[in-house]
Length: 421
Ligand SMILES: [Zn+2]
Image (cartoon, rainbow, N blue to C red; front, side, top):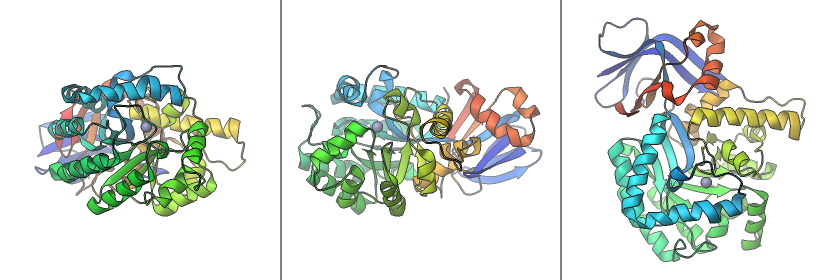
């Protein structure tokens, strides 16, 4: 039994972030939250204290693991980024020992930033994918991961033969989906509509359905990408329709970016229960555009946040949430002036980092909030002391904008402490 003590943050909805002072959180031997109660504890050996906060772990729903050591390479557009950074970074995963080493560095790094769950793309190499899964199992983090799928429009060495790509993915999914008591999930990972044949996309949809796995891909990331999709699939109008036609627009599919989606696409995504992963830092870094977050929210699209490393330079998810809020404000004041535009506030930032993302990922029965019966994925954080002196209704906002990775003292996943080192 582990007992945590501190101010508890509970992002219950996009506009409600509850704060419970002097909370006691008890974690049982199975790694589940046994009890949450206010007041003093008789237990001597508590983690945290009156100056600490207890937060649900952060969820990064779109990240590229092979690009961990390629952050902050400025001055490239999306196409050049792929050629100069993304493809060479993935190519290194032909060496499975290298993939294993980088996976450890990646996990140590993001866990130190408070990320307890991530959905990561890998490389097209099956052996490396298997090896990375072993590291995920060993380190105790909660993750969705998968072999990158592409069989066209990709450089040699990374471009797969279609049947081989599907067979390898099926074997990896059978081995790893639901492993470690459900802590690991397999995500079929077609790179983008432009890099996949119709056969590969339809095969992916069929396999993902069969094993009840996740699917992750990219959609509407930039105008250039949208134009390229039109060229590859002239019968469909856009990549959302391509994915819909191929059977990939469904619950447990995570679409990264969506900068260029219009109203009809947003509604199709919302109707299918498909998650859209907003990657505000990457969208700006590669000058792809400002995603209209408020329009997506109004269309009831399930939303999560992604660091999109390394197209996004920032692994610390609260900074990505702040960028999401700031981008929505930039759209409000600059791009599309609308009188009744409610820009999201800090409560929504916390929601996107935790419970909202858990709902978008169909994992809210296990994670996203610290409450009885859920898995204990949580952080103990010691923020700057002035926050405790603010009126209670201002504290969640102050914490979101001021929190730093070095203030995170403990990271738990399913009740086990996994960082920081
Ligand atoms: Zn991506």
